Length: 328
Image (cartoon, rainbow, N blue to C red; front, side, top):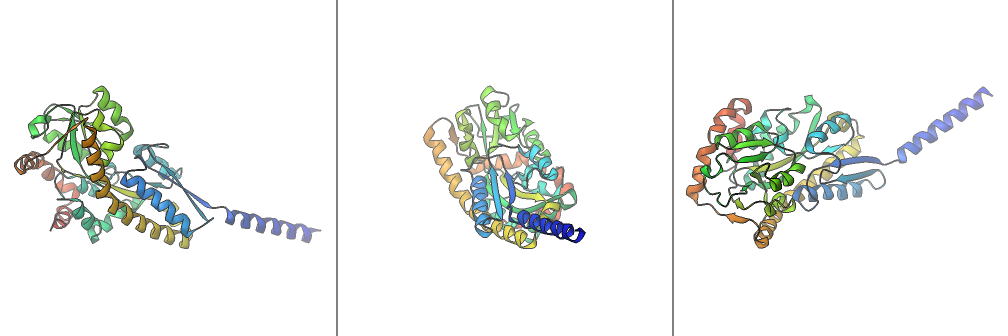
């Protein structure tokens, strides 16, 4: 009888394991932008590719538009294991590593091609591991695009046009210093709160890409958008390092491959989507697009230049030089 009971227990245990192995690994991917943005499209492409590689074994659930968390809440949820993938702007990482602040320096990159060149360089790739000791593993960089400035005032051409104005910024000390260098008042605020803050005048302006400005309808509550291209919005797709390391090796390898393909897809879409959305903003006729002369850009560069000196020691001159070399 005891032998029978042991045998029955072994059979039940084996069947339980088999049943568990048939359950797909559910991966929750949370982000704050719309599906139609470069980030949204990258997330959907990752889901498509990953589920094709592992039919019935992996299920990717995408939660856009801050449906689950904003980026700040999402970071804590990721570390607790409540979600598995997050794609915050690099501006959100300065409490985990100061090195990623390099991406927030104003006028560091000439264009998005230079950004991609740097992120694929040895220095850029190494930064994906910069937060492992804090429990976060970087998997990929996803490009959104170059940043533009907008305000509720009719003129935005020279640095003095923003003196005294309140600007929403991401959670970044470098961006805070950038607007203080312009004698403006930076206000750190979650992405999901920006539209209402602009609409009600809690802040006077913001900085963002054409795709974010259009999909979040900021152009409907701002009077002018200056085409400054003064910075970059770049995301890092991150995961919980312990969870990632604990995945079956074939799953981890396959997900990494799907992520690499989704990254190429999203980055190629970025310029196309931003050009499209710039055109749609112009066609809507709600906010005027202010074009700047080379002399105007030089004035903006000069006004923001002190930020480089202020943060060089934290970021590292070698890293800043490596980023600058990507412009060549």
